[in-house]
Length: 186
Image (cartoon, rainbow, N blue to C red; front, side):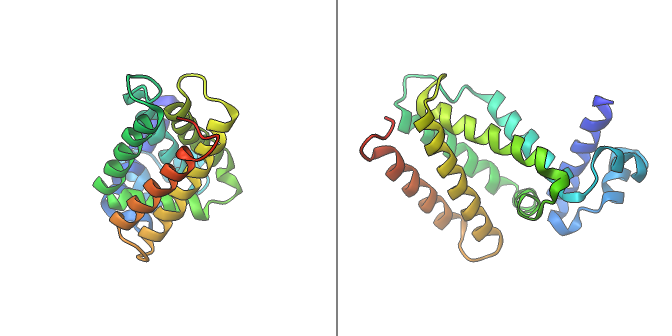
């Protein structure tokens, strides 16, 4: 069962990478995974549920790539390393980024669990980059704000209101302000 679920997520990742949100059709994902569409719908009831689950899995993979909470770097530098990695990753695959962000924004109640999981993973990575292996409540609050700024800027990029460079500057500026003020971590 787990192998089939992973095959479905791999197929959705491939279709979204090639075609973006509009190109992700459940039948195409099922065909890519080598299963019947009815089997796909037993695992994921909607396209948004499927793509938000792909997003959560991508965050999990990113979190296992590196320990964002340790090293000789100060908290702001650890956060900078993580945000640089995130910027590089979302720019490297714009169709996938567009698909996952749009799915996150339009997700229905079927995807609530996947959304909560994706948010928890990214906020935890950001909080650990700020506070180390045992982030404080303040680190978690700051991480939540940074995650919200990320989402807002990714929405602006995929809708064509700003470019990737402007998004990077906005996110970095917000992170600097949140981490360098009175009572801030770092």
